[in-house]
Image (cartoon, rainbow, N blue to C red; front, side, top):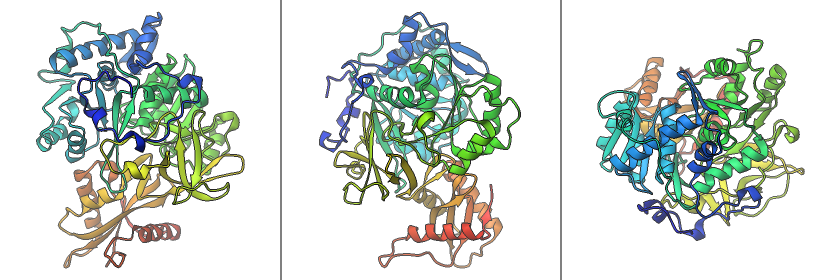
Length: 550
């Protein structure tokens, strides 16, 4: 590894041993990066230095913000971080907000100052925030004041968090601190392999994994998927729904447009109706959202709504061919399907319009390789279903986590997806090969929802799996065994749903609840989720009645 620019060496010290890393490949000329690299300089400062600071970067409900104006804001935050809040290079900073200007500005300020970003979704509850704070030893959080309640609760559960600074109102705000700070700041001299982002993602056990990414990784996803497949141009206006705490949203709504000097629309909430209206209002040209959103927008389309769009990226969950066909019929545009992973930062399989094959995820993004393997890591021939294995310029490096051994096999990243590769090299999605539920683009760990249900006094045992759903791809379905003396009812089902919403992020709640007398278990007493998944699929196919709400 290169000489680090970090003073706080926690992140580098807690990388997995290098022999456990995947084999990194930098096969494209665009992926050859200098030893000293700060991605904030490459994505932001260089446009101002090139005389393009007056170009629009952000479109917001409050108005437009240029690259130069955004740089000035970022620099002031950098000065606050380093002079007033004690951030040193390598220090971790938790960020918490919806998709808005200050979320992006604080993100870039931490990067430019040499810190490590830990971005979190607005819907997370206190205990979901406490875990990454403790795992990554985070002492400082920057947060939208509208999200203060859960943030303050998290602070009581995670003593590592020494200070929270809010923006958006109240005393001692970030804006107040910024007022007296200069709008210039010299970027930290970071190495290209210094950690700049720890993205936490739920696993099959429900315990989040911290995925560690370097400054060069932030550039690599731009120079691989965006440059080679998406092919944006300077005049593009990006728009989409994924939160910036998801790396899908980070790349698609921030990094990709900034790499080419384009602009992006920031929407704090972007359900299909609002996303469609914003596409029309801002004349957006590149859209990033989940398949379910595209499907929902079809029925809402009015003449002229999407005439400005020229690229539509679909990821976050499998894209059904029926949705691809329906969108193409309604709009004449080909959805660009893709699969990515937080471990690899962004999309690594996906084809451009001229070579895509409807129904297939696509071919490996230039710079990446992919194959299908068996349970022992051996290559499988075309036409055989197996586990997806990938390698390229980005890859899995977990923060002090034994699950590194499971994700990296013989130098390849094994994503947990089952795939088939055809004779032409196209990859066709089959299913998730673990217990993750993917609903409307959100990754939800069944065991985490089970843990929330089990805190209700009426619940004796439960099992949570994904059930097929035409609108969301999957929904969270809970099979609940009640305690003796408790009777099932629609009212109780609704009560359990509300209970889960109060325990964990609301999007994780079970949209269907089935009360059962007993749950399937192995001889050793382990819950047989595979049996529950089969039951859920059969019930969905038969249209069985369920206690369903929301």
